[in-house]
Amino acid sequence: MSDASTAAALDDGSADYDAPEWLSLEDGEAIQWVGQPTTLRLVGTVVAGVVTIPLLIGIFILLALPFQYLQIDHTDYVVTNRSLYVKTGILSTNIESVDLDRIQNTEFTQSFWGTRLGFGTIEISTAGSGGADITFDDVEDARSVREELTRVQRAFAEGGGRASGGTGGSGGRRAASEEQLDELVAELRATREALERVEATLRDREGTAPDRTDGTAGRRDGNH
Image 1 (cartoon, rainbow, N blue to C red):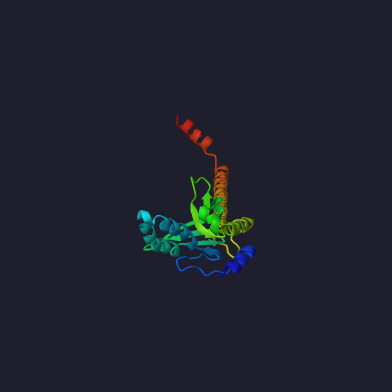
Image 2: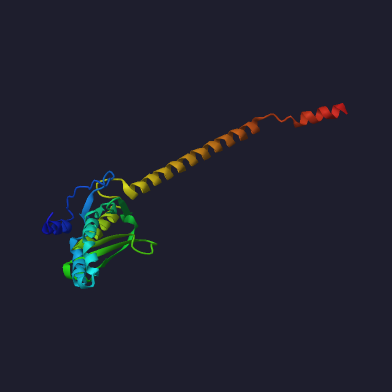
C-alpha cells in the first residue's frame, strides 16, 4: 500500500488489511492498521558508522546493520477494533497485546533523526502501569497512526465496549457476566420461594395437629 493510499485509509478508517499469519482474530475482530518500524531508522546507524570508521568502532557498527534490518523485518504492529498487538523476534516469536479498554494514555515522541526524516514512536500505557506496556517504535507518519488509534478507541467506547461487527472481546465477556449474575439471582429467588413454601406447609401441619396435652394429663391424674 502506497503512502498516499495509507494516509487516505487512515483519514476515513476504511483501511483493508490482511491478517498476518501469526495473528488469530476472534469473531468480529477486524484489523484497522498494520505497520512496521521504518528502515529510515537505520540512517542514524549508517552515519554513526561512517563517522567513526577511523576509530575502528564504525566497522563494528556497520557490521550490525544486517541484524538491525532483520529486526525491523520481523517486527509487526497491528491495531484491531479490540486490541493492539506487537510481534517481535527473529529466531523465535514474541507477541504482546493490550485490549483497547485497558489503554489509559498514549505518548508520541521523536528522536533527532525521527524529527528530520518523519518517523516517531508511540508509547501506549494502561492504568496503573509504571511505563509503556506496548510501544510502536519508529513508525512512519506516527502522528497519523496515533490519530487512527484514538479513532479506534473512540469507536470502541461509543459501542459500549463492544467492537463493531461482533460481540466478542471484553464487551462480550461483560455481557456474559451480567447474564450469569441474572441467572444466579433467579436461582436464589426460586430457592427462597421454595423454602417459604416448606415453612408454610410445616406451620399448617402444626396448626391442624390434635392437642393431646389435656388427655395425657388426665390419665396421669387417674393413675395417681
